[in-house]
Image (cartoon, rainbow, N blue to C red; front, side, top):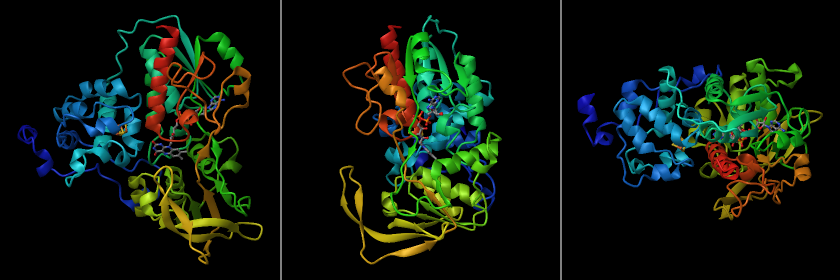
Length: 471
Ligand code: FAD
Ligand code: SF4
C-alpha cells in the first residue's frame, strides 16, 4: 500500500469504485442494506483519489460543510480514529449521511474528478469512518465538557432534534428529547426503509448519545401526553424539530377508493411490521401478488417502489409527470429501483384513479417538458388526447408533504408563514421563533427536504440557543 499511497495521481490509475452491491435478485427478497462496507485497503485507496483541492467545492456543497479532503487524507493514511473525531466536528450523524445523502446532487456532484475520472466516493468513506471507529470502540470525547445547570427540551428525535442535542450536550447543556415514537430517528427510523438504513444504526447511535448525556423520553406526544406550557416552565429553552407530516394529495377523482394508499402510512406500517412495533395488524398493507402503481418521483416514491418489490408485488410501475432528468429523487436510488425490477413511466400525469368499488387502474395523460418555473425546473405540459389507463390493484400516492403546524403553536406565540412553516427570522438569534424562548429547525422550518439539511439546521439552532442562554 505504501507505494500506492505515495502516488499523487492515484485518480488516474485507480478508478471510482463504490462498495460492492448485493445482486438485485437477493436485494428484492430482503430489507437489509444493499451495500457492503469498504475493506480498509479499499477505503484507503478510494480516499487517496482525492486531489486535496485548495478550495474544495465538495466541502462548500455539503450542507454541514464537512472537512472532506482532510478526513479523506486521514483515511488514506489509515488514521480512522482521527478521521472520526474530525468528521464529528461538523456532522452529528455522519454514518447516516454517508448512507442516505443524495451525494450525486451534493458533495460528490461537485467533486473536481467528475471531469472525466469519476467523483471520489465521499459518502461511502464517511460511512466507513464512523462504522469502523465505533467498531474499534471509539466514542465522542466528552472529558473536557464543563456542565452548566441549563436544560433544554427538544421536541422530535429526528435529525434536526438530534443535531441540536449534539451541539447542546457538547457545550454542557442537558438536552431532554421528547418523541411520540418508541425509538429515536424520526423519519430515519419511521420512514426510510432498512434497505437504505438498517435500524441498528440508530439504536447504536441512541446508546452513544445517551452515554454523552442526552436523555430521551419516548412514546410521549407533546400536546397530548404533556403540555407545551409544562416544557416552557421546566426548561431554559425549547427546540422544535417536529418535521412535516401533511401528505399532499393529487386532488383528482378516485383518490379515496380502497386500494389507494398514502406513501408514508404505507412505509411506516411496513417498518412497524418488520420491527415488531405494530399496534394494529390492520395497518400493514402487503403488496404481494399485486400490480402496484406508485405516483411521484422523489425519495419517498423510490422507497415505496422498492418496498413493494420486497413485499412480493407482481409488478411495480412508477409514473412521474416530468422526465427522468427532472426527477427530484437521488439518481442512485432510481438506478437501484430499476435494477430491482421497477418500471418507470416518465412524462405521465395522473388525472384519476379508476375502479368500481376498488382500484382497477390509474388514468394518466402524457406530458412534454415546457418552460422552467421559478425554481428553474421545467414545467410539464399536458399533451392533448393522450389519455391511457395503467392497470393497478394498488396505488401509492407519494407527492410529498406540506407543513403540519401543531394547533397549540398560536397559544404560545409561535408564528408560522403562509405555508404553515415555522417562521424564524434573520433579525433574531439563529432559528429563534417569534417566541424568544423557542427555537426550531429542520423540515418544519424549511419544508420537507433532506436529512443533512435538518441536521445542519438543528446544529445552527443550538448555537442560537447557546447565545440565548449566554453559555
Ligand atoms: P423528522 O425526521 O420528521 O422528525 C420529526 C420527529 O418529531 C418525529 O420523530 C416525530 O415523531 C416527532 N414529533 C412530531 N410532533 C411531535 C410531538 N407533538 N410530540 C413528540 N414528538 C413529535 N432525506 C435524505 O437525505 N435522504 C433520503 O434518502 C431520504 N429518504 C426519505 C424517505 C422518506 C420516505 C421520507 C418521508 C423522507 C426522506 N428523506 C430523505 C427526508 C428526510 O427524512 C427528512 O428531511 C428529515 O428526516 C427531516 O428531519 P426532521 O428532524 O426535521 O424531521
Ligand atoms: Fe456528502 Fe452528505 Fe457527507 Fe456532506 S454529509 S459529505 S453531502 S454525504
